[in-house]
Length: 192
Ligand code: MN
Image 1 (tube, rainbow, N blue to C red):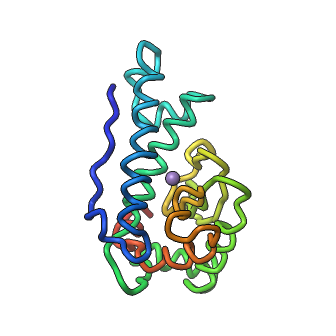
Image 2: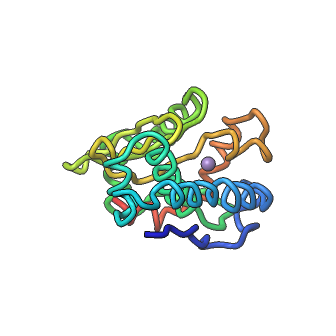
């Protein structure tokens, strides 16, 4: 199988001023593309060659896992946002499940932001659900992906420095706060 860089569901400048077009150019056009290219080169001629991306993530380790998970994580991340100037709210069953777990959407946002802020070094903040539908917030380092723990990802914030340094330099908290403005709650709620 030859994996492809997914086309973004919005223009490069659609997420401004939260994420500048220049960041999208590097993050999607260079970083994400490199993970795709590396993965295709690494699996060529191996047992992973005809597996789905999810299967590779569950069955590989080392460089193949790192690149496969980074392809998946970035596609999931980029497909969590839309052009928006005002923060939205979760929809339908997800909204109820967030209230049940955290009491309110505002409490959930605070906890998710704090978890994402406190990832040491490169990694990801995740909202996930388990097989019973119970939500939780998990942190993953580097290419970590909750699929390997049997959890279903609902939302992720990329907190690798490459995700925010051009726009926010060292101010990871400002980047995380701003991301809430552009979350595509229709897309994210549908994952629940
Ligand atoms: Mn990234």
